[in-house]
Image (cartoon, rainbow, N blue to C red):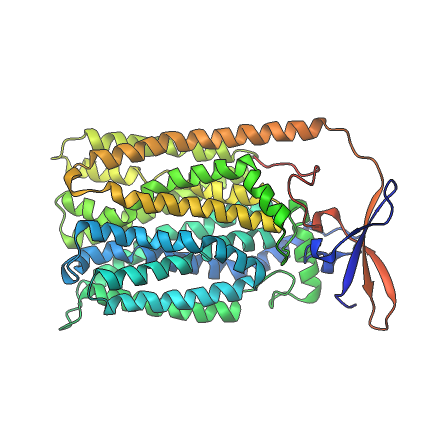
Length: 514
């Protein structure tokens, strides 16, 4: 059959009401007219095949992108501040510059992800940032470093947003909680591997070429190899995934029907954009994202703080691996707990802020002479990460309509950038060595963030109850797609409501997961 088609909404009360083809999800082209149900065993086989082909690439990329953006923190121990004569304020600005580039280009990146093939667009961005990362080694001053840090931020703006879109294309809402957790925990893996790479570069003695420059070259080459791999191997959508047979593509789309969010729609819809801007939950998630990201400034400060406890450069580099182990364990336990206990995302996310708050108290109250206690306390402050991971997968699961999803992701990730941009400026020279003011700000964020998760849950519970009380619309509706066969005959096939690219507000059958 030709893909040229039109859709007609047939309603007994309003016969012949037309809907443009642009309103239909791309998945509708594959599953229109299907009446058979998907066997659970077959669905499981398809999911495992998808896992094998896209999860390794997603995990490796998320590991590399986190490693790349935190190279600045490791470079500080390897001598970048001395070589390029950076002041404390300039060093903080480099941490902020990354997120300013991210912020300014986040919305254009999301529009591009909707307009162009997702995998190919991310591949282009990975290539550019690989070049920008390696170019750090050629920088001699603050101005040069500022430019390459801005470029890194611009390119990374496509990755998390792209991964959220891909996760919703290939996985059910329950599966998304785990998969988002799996690729996000690679941040912890990056901390460990980066620590060992930094340890290795610390021992490279090359005349005229500093260890921090070798760090940038090595990580840049790794990213370049990944860019090529992504271009060749990463799919753009289940509707054209190279590793699925035509029959398996149909089943892959059938699998996610329960999400009521479809696969994707390449046409921008202004009404969905406006709905995203006027939806209260969009801004609640954005506020959580902004406040939850302020403490991320620790990623560039951690090595300097640990060194201030009296540890050597070698010990500091190796101790940075511990934070990665903690992040892996907390995210893994958090997402698995949320997946096993239905509608528990807010509770699980809020729970992980408790030990983080304990760490804040201890790092401020313990005597400065207790170096081990201060070190453990600082590690405790990073236990809250599952809250943000669960929020990422949650907003993806409670937002329907492709343009609305893209806009909501852009708003949440822009808020993430604002928090990350503001964070570095807390760490002023006059607050050293105890840094009581930055720790107090982080502690305040750790109080408000879990409260926001519980407020979001209450809002969604209320909306579900309102929908449950609404009268059932028992009018007979059919969504018909008209197609033309290769010999020119016009045929009509039924399209499920789930693939009409309706928003979560438009589709009153949509229920918010909690």
